[in-house]
Length: 157
Image (cartoon, rainbow, N blue to C red; front, side):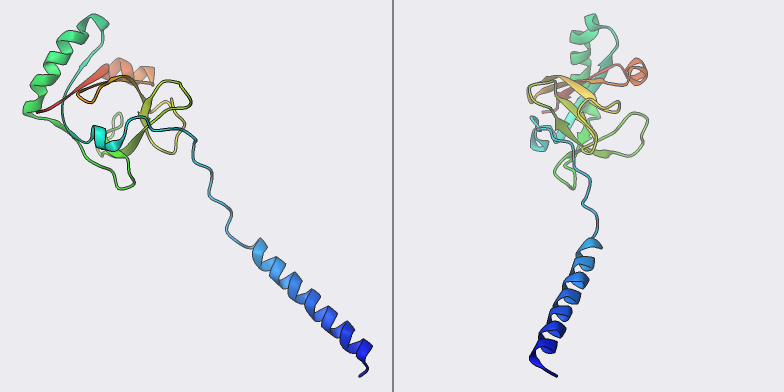
């Protein structure tokens, strides 16, 4: 076998190796879908704890409802830390707590909801007030809001 045949064989072997390597990279798993891009202005540490809970349907009942929520500390609503950095709360009509996060896009309103849904999703709650001691949340789904009202959470001592 002469030198030119060896060069051709080596070139063919190198080309075949490149094709096989190219096929291997094309069979890699597709990338995971992108998560929504939002900030989380309220951390899980700020929300985890025991809360008194009450709700109102009319704005004029907000002050009275806050006082009722303080009385709810006798049987508090407990918010635990979630396994992935969020916090555990109940979604509407769900008997099992789900991990939620606070989310905001730009300077828009803050919401609490599932981390893989966009801010303001139908299952979210809009944060109307949060100061670490009082949290007021309004359901985004009008039908759910009509049943549950605006939720007032007051941190228990």
